[in-house]
Length: 539
Image (tube, rainbow, N blue to C red; front, top):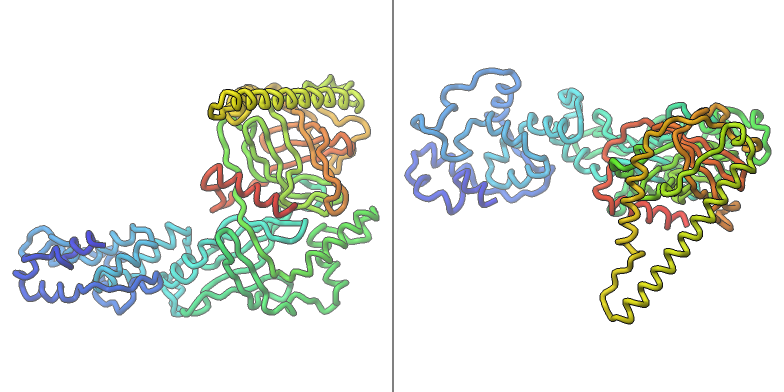
C-alpha cells in the first residue's frame, strides 16, 4: 500500500514535487485522499464520468486525445495519477480481482477508475470463463462488478467436485460457472448395464443475479421448475443446500407417480421390466432412502487423483457394473506399487467412500492359454498361489521390521527401519519401474471363465496385462466386510475389469470422459487426506 501511495504521489513520499506544482496538480492531489473501504463489492464505487468515457474510447478503438499522452509540459509522467485513465483501466484490468479492493483504498481517483465495467468484465472472463455478453445485465441494473463480487467471488469456494452425504449411496456433484449462472449438476451413471454410454446429469440448484442487491439461490429438484433455496458454506471444503419450498417436489399422483418417474430416470425402465425380486427390493429401498432428503444435503469436496509418468494408465473416474446394484462411480488412483479403486457412489453392501478394489502392481499374473482360461479352477489356482506368495512376503517384511526395531532399541540409535518408509520408497520405485515396462505389452486373448457372471457380455476379448488384486465384499449394512482375492484385467487406456473369485462375478469399468474444472488436488498429501476422510465417514 505504501508503494502504491508513493507511486500516485499520496502520503509522505510526495515531497516538494507536489507542493511546487501548479493549481491543477494541487487539485489532483487533493482529489487523491486515501480511502479505507476494503469490501470487494465496494471496490470501484462512486460516480464515473471521465473514466467511463475513457473506457468507451478503449472499447471503441478511438485514438487518445493528445493532451493525455504525456504529463505536464510534455515530460514523462512521474506518478500513476498522471497516466491517461484508459491506460490505468488496462493496467488495473490485468490484476487479480482480489487485489482490486486494496487498490481502491489508495485514493478516490483509483476508486473511480475501478468502477469502470471494462475492468470487471475482463476479470469475469479470465478468472471464471464468463464469455457471455455482459451488457445484457443492464436490463436488471446489475454491472460486471456486481457479477464478480456478489456471484462469482462470493461463491467461488463451492466450484468443483463434491460428494453428497446420502448415506451409503453418495453421489457426484459438479459445480460450475455456466454463463451468468453457477449451477450444481448431479452426475449419474448411464443405465445398467451400458457402461460405455456417456454420463447423465441433472441440475440440483443454481445461483444468479436477479437484481443488484444480492445473488438468488434456487432449488432445481423436482418437476415444477426452479424455486426458492438456500446455500450455506459450513466450513472449508464443505457446504449444505436447503430447499425452502419442498412442495414443489411433490407430484399430483402421489408417491406412486414419484416412484415411477424416478425409476424411469434412474434405471430407464419400469418395475415390471425388472424380474429379479432382490433387485426390485434394492431399487425400492434406494428410492425411499434418497427421496427423504428433499435436496437438503451436505456436500464434501473431492479431488481428482494426481497422475505421474509411472502410472499404469491415467487415473480418474470410472463407471463400473456392480450386479443388482447397477452402475456405480469409482475413482482409480495410483500409490506406488498399489492402485486403489474408491467408491464415489455406493450401495447398502459397500457404501460410498470405501475402497472397493486394490491392485498389487508388483504381482502381475500370467494367464493360461485361452482354452485353459475358460476353466475357472485353473484361474483360481493361479490367483491363490500368488495370494500365498503375497502373504509370505508380508510376513517376512513384518519380521524384518521387528528385528530392525529391536536392534535399534538395543543400540539406542534413532529409528530408521529398513521396512519402513525408506524401504517402501525403494520398493515403490522398483515397482514403478517394472510397471512402466509393462505399460504397453502385447495384447493377449481374454475370455471369462465358465461360471463367472457378467452384467455386460460385451466386454473386450483382448487385454494388455493382468495383476493380482483384492476386492471388498460385505453383507447388507456393510456387515462382516472382508477383502477377497481377484484379478485386475487392463483392457486399454479407458477400460479395465475385475474378476471377483469368491463371488464368481465380473465387473467392467469404463472411463468417465468429462473435463472437470476446479477439481485438481493442491498436493498429493491433500488428495491422500481427502481419501482418508471420505473412507472414515463411510465407516
